[in-house]
Length: 187
Image (cartoon, rainbow, N blue to C red; front, side, top):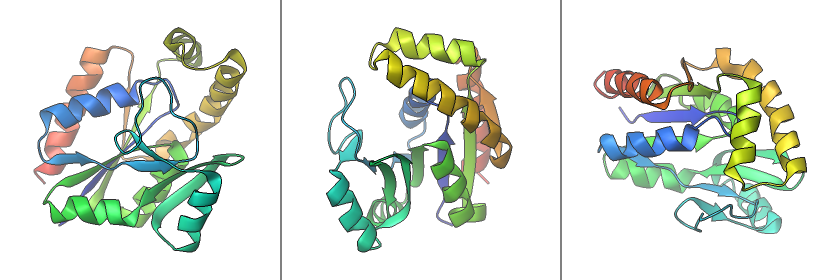
């Protein structure tokens, strides 16, 4: 059976760090590169971290039914998963790993059902989340405030995921993730 693992979290919860660890330690996993219309952050590269598209290019792909799922997270800020990306990974005999926003994670779980393991990475608190986003230094203060407000809403979705991992201590969260993934991949 073709499988997928879905990671979702409010921005700043440490999801990307945990996903990178899992990819490095589980050769059966392969990252699905999502599409987005937002600008690259930090060292992000087109075709590696995301496929960076204009809003018009993204809408064109929507009209072509190219996405498994997509979401307009903010006005003209789209994120989506290409069907061809999923098929490419499965053809290689790998488990697809998604790093998506919370609503995208819920949608992907509905689409893939028992083929999917959905994992919600939660911050220890909203205050800690705001501190992490500020320390990261990749966003302006008004963007951080928007992300924190969105995170409060996103936390209400965690009960729609198969597993919730609180990333309070990275080492503990990493061990918990490894155990969860081992069980799912070997099932």
